[in-house]
Structures are given as C-alpha cells and as structure tokens.
Length: 121
Image (cartoon, helix red, strand yellow):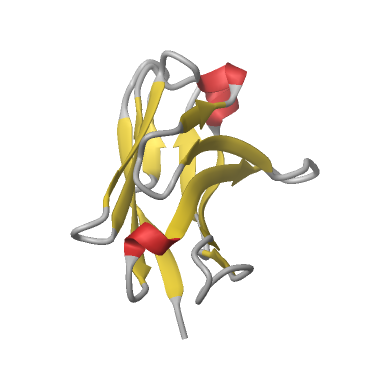
C-alpha cells in the first residue's frame, strides 16, 4: 500500500559530492521515522543516518560524520542525503527505509530498491 523510492546515485570521483533523494508514497510523512542505509557485497547492511518523524533527532554513523547530511521535507514527503567529500569506501548500494511510528502505521517497514553510488579510485 505504501512505498519509498530512491534516486540520485551515480559515479563520482573521490572528494566529489552527490545528493540522494527518497520519495515516500504514504498518507503522512510525519508518521514515519526515516533513515539511509548502505550495503556492499559480502557485508552487512549498515545504518548511515537516521532522522526522526519531525526532523528534530538526527544521528550519523561515525564513518560519515562531518561529510553527510540527512534532511527531510514532510510537506513534500521527501528525504535527502547530501554526501560531500566522498571516499572510495562510500561505494555501496544506498537504501531508503521508513518505519511507521504513529498508531495507524506502527510496525510497518518500507525499503526502497536501492540506488548505486560508486566512488572511483
């Protein structure tokens, strides 16, 4: 019934920047906590950044602090990940995740299909 979808991935040189977007097809974006995750072959999917329903609580993985910025626009049902000073180790498939928080959607988990980010050596 609901879904999220990523866009904005691509190929970039080390030190470059990319901006990922996540579009949420939901009734109210304010009902969902959201986060960005990434995964490389042979490794576990890791949490990159998370943002609470209203955007007041933000957390980052240590590996991206100071370089990545997560944000959301609930009026337009969008979430973003601005990635600066990209490094080869940032290469991964990046996924958007939404977790239902408010009672009518509580417990629902939405994953996007992912978007590839490649940082060349």
